[in-house]
Length: 127
Image (cartoon, rainbow, N blue to C red; front, side):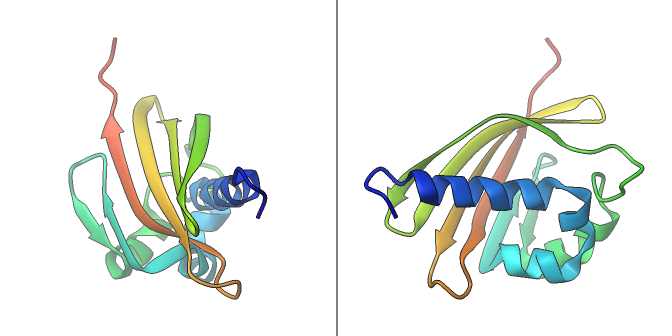
């Protein structure tokens, strides 16, 4: 990792984009590799998700079908909070609905790589 963590942030962004893609959402094997064993999320609806419930729901959620609405991320940036911890922030649009998002990625070892530990999505009201 370089001094300012650019490589760590770039790796976390790459994996975030995989999770947002239809391929990442519809493949349980890929999602299992990307979600931390202790993963939790507070979704746009306010619902709290754990890893097991998210893995079950991802393939049928919006954004999972190649021929359906897909996430359009923008303004993605990140910072290294500590060695092995990256915080990403960005916005998405899915089927006309905007959300501000925040993800914490952690890397426990080289074998598992970066995994999403926490995610929160907040709806953006219409202007």
